[in-house]
Length: 319
Ligand code: G4F
Image (tube, rainbow, N blue to C red):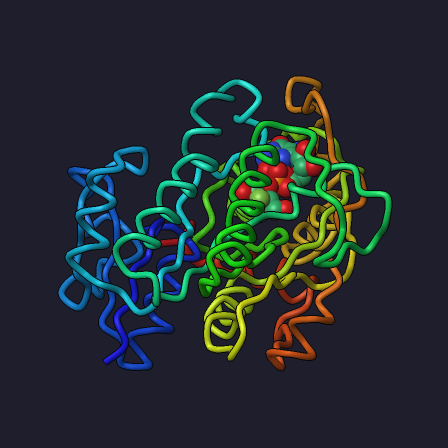
């Protein structure tokens, strides 16, 4: 039985990964904040099938205890302060969680179980203002926010442990990926839930920041399948997981409101306070490497994703 250890197990990606691994008969362990009530997470249905290990991500001793006890074959490091906008207000916390905790985990694995395969959930935000679009695994790092700086540290250190220590260390460089399990602080879920709530008469308007901001959006379930494939490859490497297409925030608005048959212009308001101090440029990923080496292909396109999120929100709000 393959033993997996997941940080960030209660989040969107962690919970889909649990389902993927349990289906493949893995023994699954997860790192959770002290006092987490699993019945209030996406893992509620699988609580008895998972080994939970409590600790804060910045608590090196707790991480070390978990890794030494489990002796994992595969480690998926997904935990992070995941909100880019918030990182401007919380730079130190973001660097500790998204940067230094990754370094601690790499070092713990080197000392406790150097044969384990390790996947770091890196982010397109490491590219910040890239000179080339689409980006690939060789694009230079140029982050423009504390979140991207912290992720850049984790990404480079993962490469360093692979190259300097010859360990099986992989960066999965993830572009935006969404699902009904995503919190509303991320813009696709915010928009799709608002469109559904307006349709049901539960909300009147939707306030948004930069409607022209562009991102490369995928379905989280496609991305999670890629994470697993990346650790099954015979050689450790870095892989971009992305759709390869740029879309604007406004396109999400148009599709979501069209799905509920409402004119978005009557309900959407621009809010200056939701603009960010700095936006990255044209973050679009080239998934060719993952396609060629891992045979990875997304199954859901952008339009299907937004329609699916809107229908899921309608179902949930209608209950
Ligand atoms: O949905 P977002 O908050 O996602 P963001 O900042 O791109 O970050 C997500 O993707 C990254 C990978 O590319 C991850 F590393 C990260 O952890 C996270 O998962 O914002 C998307 C875009 C931004 O340009 C933002 O300025 O939407 C713009 N936006 C416009 N109005 C808004 C809003 N974003 C939010 N959250 N709320 C708004 O009202």
